[in-house]
Picture 1 (cartoon, one colour):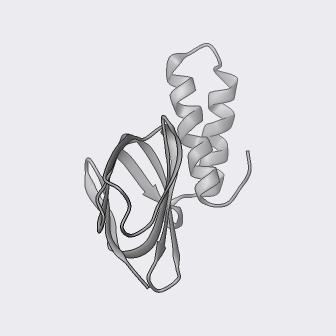
Picture 2 (cartoon, rainbow, N blue to C red):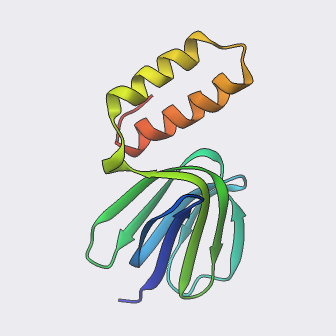
Picture 3 (cartoon, rainbow, N blue to C red):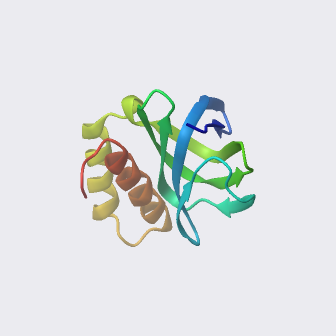
Length: 129
């Protein structure tokens, strides 16, 4: 099966890299599915989106991603995020608490961003909001 090189990088660190069969991401233009050999593209990631990578080993790597860009060529995908967290790094209870705090402070622009981040974290760990 065809594969591609994938790197998920946040401003402060490399989050994940390896070989994959597919990448799914949420951009400002909608959800993208990228397979090996995809036409080159550049997309802007949404604030509080999810990126899912299906590795060549059949595992799924899920990350909550906060802004940034995705670049794809035929054999490489680069996700360059402002911030990103892998699902196994996320504390679901802390994300629920952050969502509750953001919901309580509805009038603040910071609350909207905090709500998007908490929602993405919960979706990354498989919890519905």
